[in-house]
Length: 592
Image (cartoon, rainbow, N blue to C red; front, top):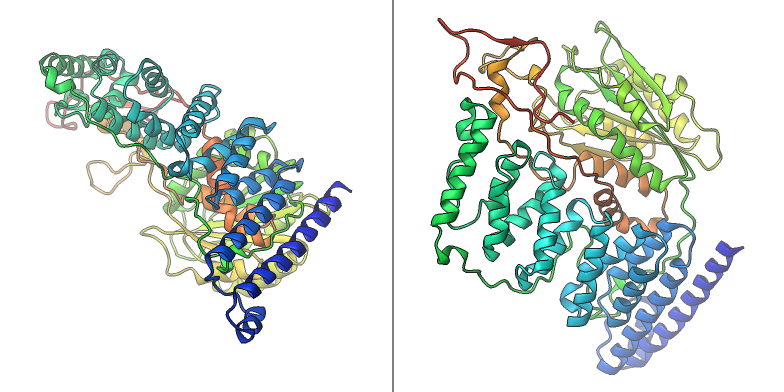
């Protein structure tokens, strides 16, 4: 009854909106002919007073419509309402967003409201800006601003300089970031830029002071790196002396630079007020032309249909797919965290596949809601086999559809995701079409992530067909090699062969590396976006990207930086008269 009442209110609001808008447009027309034309086409309103009335009517319409959505018990409906309001730059909308920021019962929805206000930061007055910053500090202290959501806060406090409170914020962020974790790198980059302008002696001394710690030295060097008197050499310049000596040498260099910088080295540079942009929610716009079709959307938010969510990943595990295997092993728990927030009963299954003649054709892992157990189960999967291009996609789909125990709920969303860089065998495409079309009639959706790498077999049009038959989408995805891989998979000295035992003299190769920022359209984000799109009304699909991007940043978790120490080593590999040292366990630069 509650949902029916909301829908009836929305319909009444839309009828009122259409009637008033039509009357305003009619009044603005210069002649009966123009009035008749306006009935069949949207037009700009030229009279300023009439335009102002039309804008006011539009804003009130959106406030009333989204106000009903903000009363929903479903947090996704409330978050979508916040994103809908975020697109309009108007003082009345701003006040409504502050109300959500202060009063919504779910912290995650307040995070959405905080980012929505971030997207209109240039329109806030001084008191509103202070209120936004202070609330951001509170959210950060509670661990609710994570990933890239922290970037706006550090940039917003930068113009105030290194006050005691801002120093405390800076130190907190440094202690909760990891230079080996891509989700922390944009925050560290913002801190680096801010410190280069603040040039605060106390903060710089703090960072130099922690350089004796292997788990802090490279993060500190990175954050200090834009100072005008920054040290040119880094700790990894001394890696052959071992980690302890390298940290000590780096700290000595920075201490001398700090002592010799002089007063001019600590003279701050002015910083202009920060006005965005938000990295996850598009900038708000004023309604300049109420006749523009983009402001005429009549949206009614029906219930989301993700009560039961079953997702099976069918993943090519042949030799070229090492980055993909690493992604699945690393991000399966992140996927499940996202699914738990958008569904009451999510489950995930995985089918790894290779080809006939390989060690296995398919290796299935059944549905589970326990992400940690699934992560442990797939830890031993590696990428091997697949000498020819076509792979056993058909066998993987048969296993996914007939061997896995899918939910029988009427409301269940059943998703199959094929991930690969090679097509199915051509003679199986007819059977694949029949199977996928039949499944699509039973409320299955099929998505294909086409892996773009140097081994990709053509344009993978067959994956496009599978997605079309399965009422889903086909997407290109790039899986980067990890900056911190298991060295067992690396070429030895560029000779094109693989090692089975890792030579100890190779271990420092990645000493001193820092991660690259998380790609804005990586496969993890693309996949969650597409799954959410299957559950929301079509009119809201343009809001999927900001909804998912904000959600996934909020779900990032802090992993302490832990770099593996090593003793002094020889710069060159084994040669005449040199002792060859081996280790049976692969070197792990970050022992998580």
